[in-house]
Amino acid sequence: MSIIYVFDLAGTFVFAISGILTATRNRLDWFGGLVIALVTAVGGGTLRDMMIGSTPVGWMQDGNYLIVILAGSLVAYFFRGAVRRLRRTMFLFDSIGIGLFTILGLTKTLEAGLSIPVAVLMGVVSAVFGGVVRDTLCNTVPLIFRKEIYATACLAGGTLYVSLTYFGVVENVAIVSTVVFIILLRIFAVRFHWSLPALDGSRATADDVVS
Image (tube, rainbow, N blue to C red):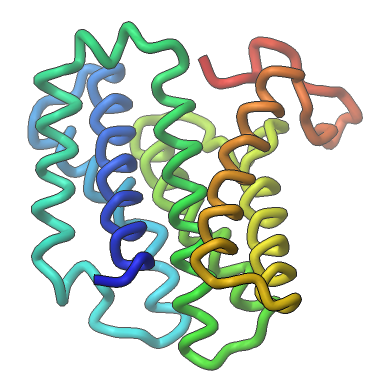
């Protein structure tokens, strides 16, 4: 079992949890919650696979993904009391998820023989578009369209991975380093209120940050 596959399943698990937590906060029923968990977990990867011509898409060829999504949903539901007590839970699971999926999308695109810039962009797509679908279905402005550093962290992480492998860093070390970098960048961005300027020139306030 490769580290990429492990990361893929881990990312699917944490994004399923993120989806269920969002569904719970929006008072959806079980069916609605499972739909949100599914699109959050595999939405970005599905779009990526379709764009690079890798069909049927990955989760349709491996039943482990649906099992992991169901497991993440059950964990988030039955332990929701404990999960809710964790500070910035939604933010934490999103940060872990985008770190894992950035690497997955990037490496899968490179394996498909596409260029490095395209691979970095597909890493971003893999990481953020499941969340875009989730937030859209829950009638929330997706994080990628806000001033908060989100997709930018994935872009920076993908660039770091490419740079590390170019200079001969062992692949597993490059992967772990990139995932940790993305997670830490997100944490520091929220902690110190780093943000991109809005189109009107304003900066993010504390209310713009995920709670």
